[in-house]
Image (cartoon, rainbow, N blue to C red; front, side, top):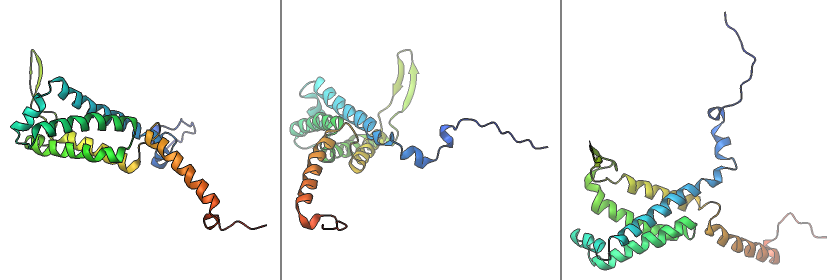
Length: 190
């Protein structure tokens, strides 16, 4: 015998349609965690290179056969710190993403590609702790995907890019209002 229950339970998150979740007022905040992790991550890598000494990273680049290692070393550090700060603040993200993506691609091809995909390679657990092998290119791809999402989807709220766009929109609406050819066609002259 089949029984039917008429007691309603509150809706669970999994019961909500995807459209409701993705179109909610919270969805426009999605770029902020991307900006925070990508910006902070790039800046941290740049400052870590500086902390090892002014000649340490160029020496690594020279060992890898990179031409003009001192120039490329400083350029990489600058891109990581300045580009990371730009992404963190949401300032000129599409422009800053170009050299950042170049740094990621070079690192992926010259350093990480030979070690495969996975960025976590647990080799042993000793009394000193976990021992890991060299990282693969997984993290580079994650950073590239985050940069692509920020470029294609925008920097989101609390971004300098949004503040820069508002004056342009206001100027465009003022210009359109003063230009008779740009007025709404449905206006009826009185």
